[in-house]
Length: 380
Image (cartoon, rainbow, N blue to C red; front, side, top):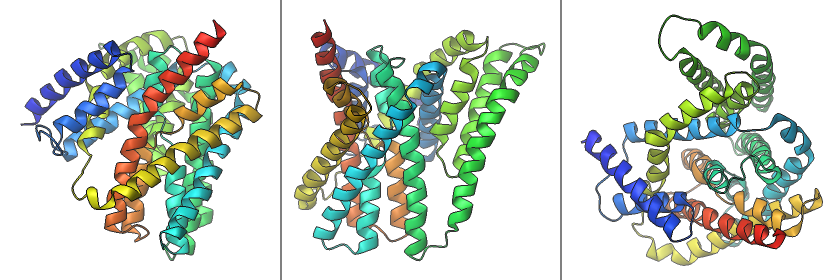
């Protein structure tokens, strides 16, 4: 059954992506929507399974690895200030309004803070694909978005650890921060000294495709240790890509990883997001879903855009950056699951936020396309 489901996903995602492009939208939008159609909410041709989730995780890891390979280190350094402003702007606004919304809904202080943190999360895996389609991944805006996403991820996870410790969870704050500091320090050191050495040594083995194999080993090891230290596998994969981007193997690895990724794993990732959607009982909470979706979209858009504007971007570029930060994606889904286990979210509220996360993920690509296209037209 799995083999047939994979065939259905690949056919449907490629066709839906092509239709989306013909309609003037990013291909990724069609792939997200077809997942909803294929999933249990509509046709029921594809079901969420552990295997599908694993393949999907490989897809998002490889997507962020490719983003790292395409990152310009010099541009990344130049956008450090902007990324910091965007990252914190995109946290403060949704945290404040999310907390206020939770309080208004009758949630207690910890539940309201958790809702705010959940809405503060960002996953730019969807935005990365949209940026690639618009040839803006290597631009100043694209580099700022990637840097801001790393900052957002780390700050939100550390803040969540603080919240859970005060809410009665068995969390050692010092250990949480220490593990993250050790990961980034270790990743930078290994990326600088060990990665080039490993690529040179491993590529000389007398077997086929040693270069691409060595790159995937590096990617998966970085992703594993990032997840182990509570950062996020996609951040580890991104750092691995950046580490390889300064070596002589960059182009060969990029071409082969892109072929592997976009032929099977990345389409599975995009489609699986739609497959995970559950709309049972959605009508009784429709008003709440609409309210939280509006808050989630506007706070991230405005907060991140103001951060970009304060760091020197024009208004149109700032809005484009803000729109790219809207998607909560798999990062927020992970946080929501943590909140459910820690009883910071009720089951009904969990179902609501999953739909809100899906909404933010679906609206991001067309918003980016509209704003960046308008920006390009204005420049022209």
